[in-house]
Amino acid sequence: MGLGAGAAVFGSRWSRLSAAEAPSGGPLNMAVIPSSGKAVPAVGLGTVNYQGNPDTDDLSQLSNTLEAFHRLGGRILDTSPNYGNSETVLGRLLADLGIRDDMFMATKVDREDRVGGERRMDGSFGRLGGRIDLMQVHNLRGVDVQLEVLQDWKAEGRFKYIGITTHRVSQHADIEHYMRRYPLDFVQVNYSLADRAAADRLLPLAQDRGVAVLVNRPFGKGSLFRAVRDRALPDWAADIDAASWGQVFLKYVIAHPAATIPIPGTSKPHHAEDNAGALYGRLPDAALRAEMERYLDGLSQA
Ligand SMILES: NC(=O)c1ccc[n+]([C@@H]2O[C@H](COP(=O)([O-])OP(=O)(O)OC[C@H]3O[C@@H](n4cnc5c(N)ncnc54)[C@H](OP(=O)(O)O)[C@@H]3O)[C@@H](O)[C@H]2O)c1
Image (cartoon, rainbow, N blue to C red; front, side, top):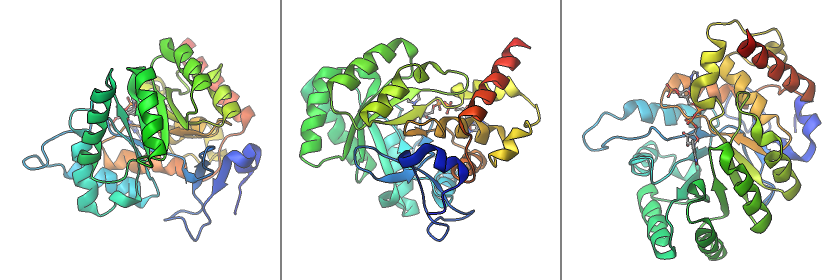
C-alpha cells in the first residue's frame, strides 16, 4: 500500500492509492468513509463561486480549475442549489470535460417542508445531470423533516450518503444532537487552524460514531492567508512535504484522526493545483499539529 509515516499514525482511517494508480506525484492521500469503507481522495473542492451563464459567459477559468483538480486526483465536489447557479455551471462544465461520472458529487437541500425538499432535490438531479453521491441538509434548515426524506431516498438508492451542514460554531450543539439522533454518513462543519472549535466535541464524536466529515472554510474563508501574509514557511513544513501555506493548512485538517476531508473553495486553476498538492506526501502527526497551532496562535499575539 505504500503507507508513509503519517499514515501509520492514523490506522484504519487512512489508505493510499498505490503509485501506479495515482495520477501523478506518487501515492495519493485518501480518506476512508466509515459507513461504506470506500476510500476517497482526501481534498475536495468547494464551488460557492461557480456562477455564470454557460451560454453567454466565458467560464473557461472555472473549467480549467475543475480540470486541474481532476487531473491531480481530486474527486469530491461540494455545491448547493443556493450557490447561485453553481449546480447548473458544474453540470455543464463537467459534462463538457467528460469527467462528470468520475466525480463524487455532494449537494444540499434547503427547504422547510417535505414537498419543497423533494422538488429541490429533483431540481438538483436535473441541474447536475448525473449521480449525486451525498445529499446534505444545508445549515440544518427543516432538518427533522428533510432527514426523514433523505433516509427514504437513500433507501430507494437515489443517493448513497446523507448528511447535515453548518459553517457556524453556534450550530455545533445542534449538529451534535442530530449526529446522535440519525444514522448520518457525513457531517459538514467549519474547521481550520484558525477555527478549532469543532475539535472539542464534534470531530471526536464523528470518530466514535463512524461519520465522515467534510470540512468547510479550511482556510477560515481566506483569513489564514492574511494571518501568515508573506512569511516564509517554517522548517517543519518540509517534514510534511508542504510547499505552500495552503498545503500546510490543508494537511493540518486532513491529519485530524477523524475522517476529515477539507473542501477548500477556489475558482482559480493555480490555487486548485496548489491545494491538490496536499493530496501528496507526508502528513503531520499529533505533535506537529500542536506545533502548528502554537505557531498560528503566536502570530495573532504578535
Ligand atoms: N454551511 C455550509 O454548508 C457551507 C458554508 C460555507 C462554505 N461551504 C462550502 O465550503 C467551501 C469552502 O469554504 P469557503 O470557500 O467559504 O472558504 P475557504 O475554503 O476557507 O477559503 C476560500 C478562500 O481561500 C482562497 N484560496 C483558495 N485556495 C487558495 C490558495 N491555494 N492560495 C491562496 N488562497 C486560496 C480563495 O480565493 P480564490 O477563489 O481566489 O482561490 C477564497 O478567497 C465552499 O466553497 C462551500 O462549498 C459550505
